[in-house]
Every structure is written in C-alpha cells, then in structure tokens.
Amino acid sequence: MLKNIISTLFTKGFVAFINLAILLVSCQQLGSDIRGQVSLLIFNIAIIQIINEIYTGYILVYFIPKFSLKKIYTSGLLWAIICTILCVAVMLFLFVFLK
Image 1 (tube, rainbow, N blue to C red):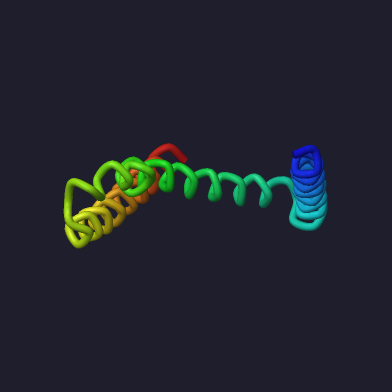
Image 2: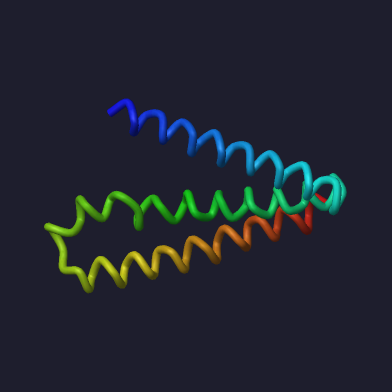
C-alpha cells in the first residue's frame, strides 16, 4: 500500500515537473502570445469534450442494460457530431463577432 502511494506521488510529481518544463520551453520558443492562443484552442477543445461527455460518457453504464448496443452507439455518435458542430459554430460566432 505504501509502495503504491509513493509510486503515485513520484509519478504525479514527475508529470508536473515535465509539464512545467514544457510550459517554460514553449513560452520561450514561441512567445507568450502564441502560447496563449494555443492554450485557448486547447480550452475550447476541452469545452467541446465536456459537452460531449454528457451523453457519451459514464452515463452509458446506465443505458446499456436498458437499450440495445446499436441504438446506444448510433444515438451517442449522433449526439457527439451534433454537439461538436454546434459548439464549433458558437465558438466561431463568438470569435468573429467579438473580435
């Protein structure tokens, strides 16, 4: 148990250190303006992923015993496509008109 805790702490600390190094090197090489734009792009992708997870994430555990797998798959795929298109359209609208 103690070995697992120490291993997890070491791994998470190492990943945090690597992420800090990537941040520092990318800011130095790209500049803070480009780094900020990349961060906003990643943030927008994360928002789209969170919205897609509403229906296609852990809720599938609830739906699997009640519906057929084909129906869940097709509706989940349709949900993901529609949400992605709508989120991209809203973000594009905000980018164009609020710039």
